Image (cartoon, rainbow, N blue to C red; front, side, top):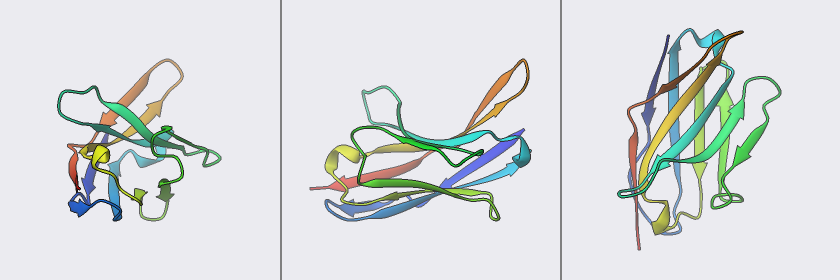
Length: 120
């Protein structure tokens, strides 16, 4: 079992920056990848960024490439999302997730979300 707690969401002006944090606890050694998703009102939840435990490979949504950076502090069991040059379209609830992949099963865990609001 993995528990995830997000923090760092806030109201920020367009062009500003925020850093979101996701602290993981529980069966931390079993996590294969962690990521950030977001969901705006009336839209589907979408992938923002992911990072793999092995190799540290990352992937980003086209809409955030060059502006957002995902990273992980293994000593603190925390994944971060640095968001720069924020736009009003970035307004959403941001969710942290973790993937635990076994031989025959795969489990996905989610945090409760943190609100990011970007004003014009």
